[in-house]
Image (cartoon, rainbow, N blue to C red; front, side, top):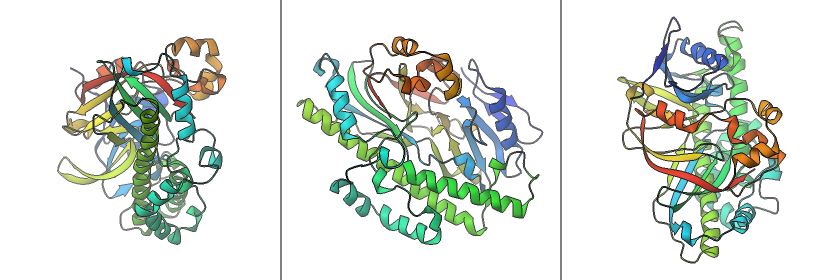
Length: 404
């Protein structure tokens, strides 16, 4: 049985599901700094993939009363996962998946920043119409009318696009050799703009309200309920979370179209799992209505379906939540990094990466060394550390991986 360790802080404790997995000293300090804030509710929960982030550790769950810390929510607002099981099995697939990988890369813009990672030749009509009909365009116009610095960010130009870094598209096989499609992305350029803008505004407000020495980290600046920008921030972040979910759905539709065209027996067999892991939401915990920020964590109420991916050469998992109240009904969002991207590039070679991704149709060049499997924690150890948070329904192994 897993369980948590307690880090005492002198105020609210940190409950950390880290048995058998490493935790950086810097990440632990970030967790403790947040737990000392006066509006933290009950405790801070740390997932087994916890690692150093900006202000707040990635893999942390923070319940707050009447306040939100924008930098804890981050700038990849609504980032999350989507997975869908198909009717295909391994026997239905070609011996080489290279052409399917190329088709997926053409169907879904990826890589680059700004327009380089968006629809370079114009947004497809179907995507533009979806943006308008979903209400996203109208809602964004209202937000931008109040905050001009958000105007000009890529919104519909990035709808249905993947991005860079640890964002990916994968075709996987489960324990019964059934084919799944899985992807990881968020709110792209517009979410980044919204997050960055409000983080800066929160810092300015902190200086005016509390003074520079009031918190241990400037990134822990917050908006309090009742302040003018609090409601505007909530409106912006909830919009970005909806955009992120829509973004994943558009990408999934385009990937499934590729499979349908290439493999005529294809059909969707199981409803999609689509879950955020970088977001904030109003919830009730320990008898109190609070704002819950999951920075690199998935909601895992009893019965909730979630996705916990490993690295691009490891296993991933479809899970069902057990509703553990001490974790604020949460679980990890992946394996979690063991080193920075710079350190991974310094330490590992292309040959190392090729060996680690044997059997996976994916990029094997210097541009993805920072995402090589050895830069991440052991996903089996991460799963063992949270066996009281989720149960595993399916174990997936990727055979195709598209990175930005």
